[in-house]
Amino acid sequence: MTTETSLTWQGAAQLFRKNASTPEPIVLHIAPSGLRIEDTTSSLELLAGAFQVTEQPNTAFVKITSALLPDGVIMLSDRAGIAALEQHGFFKASPDFKTPFYLRALIFFGVLSILGIFFFTVGLNALVSYSAAHVPPELERAMGEAALADFLRTQRLATDSAVKATLQKCAQLIRTWHGDSALHLNVMIVENKEVKNAFALPGGYIVLYRGIMDSIQTESEFFGLLAHEAGHVALRHGSKRLLRNALLSATFLLLFGDMQGLSGILLSQSSTLLDLSYSRHEELEADEFALHILHKAGLDVQALPRLLERIGSSSFEIPAVLSTHPSQAERAALTQKVPTTLNPKSYLSSKEWQTLFSNTFQHTSEQSTQLQP
Image (cartoon, rainbow, N blue to C red; front, top):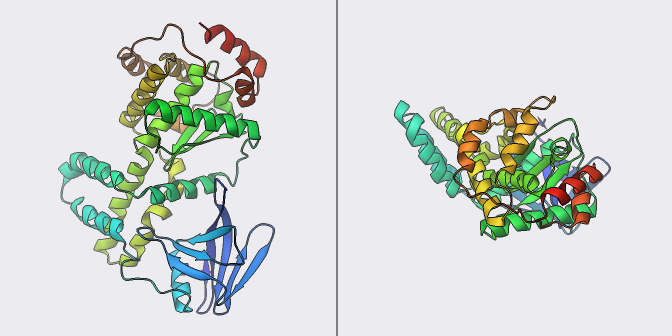
């Protein structure tokens, strides 16, 4: 929540530190005398002249840097906060900043979106796909980071260095099998056994709950789940759903004249990523992506349907994200298109496998019996 007076502004911003995988949420105070930065444990005063404010091209962010903050930068997208920086003479926006190029394109496309039912049912999907292909990677990553930071306020990540190293290795294997070294994947485990779920965010952030990890019995199942979520990233499903909403929002903002509000549409909606469900078509696309990855890697292509069937038949409540997945019959039809692997390969050592799972004896045993030729 932000509060404003004629002289000061206070609101949320993000602190990006070097070598940190996720941004830190902070409270930023803007006054005529300078800035005050607060987190949960400390605060820092930056007097006027001790910091610099620059706009980030083709994004809704401004960047705040200072010699007193050598290991990080502050990113701010709140329109009122940016206006306060301008009011006090700390920053002067260029004419294109409040409506950068990609948002001007969204305005144009948004106007087109009201032309008829046909456009909404057919043309909009093509427009969203085109727009998603032209979203700058730094903006897509910023959207994912904003949603991830909001999610992690109430969750605990697995922080063991061996777990992180193994997940990084698995992400690299997915990139290699996919054949795209530019595919950014950052995989993490949330220590929550009550939820059997996994999800992906724009920019390549993949979150696996401990609950679904405890349901995995083989490497093929694990890599199948990981490849499914990587499919959502590679196919930009999250960005497309945000763009669909942003196009409609841009249309209404344009019609009612709130031009300055356009600059924060995508980032302001990033928090809704955790509430969005993929369509059945998108889930089938991610399934197909995963099956081709499994086949190319020499893993069991039946593993992903088997894992998701096991989750659906368990006593746990099925998460909203999984409830929109295709039926087992649809998945079976997909697997028939991919040749079966008789002797699935193994890519993780016993030690690496054990670092990922809480019930190490059960998983190691099944790995040895099911994965070895």
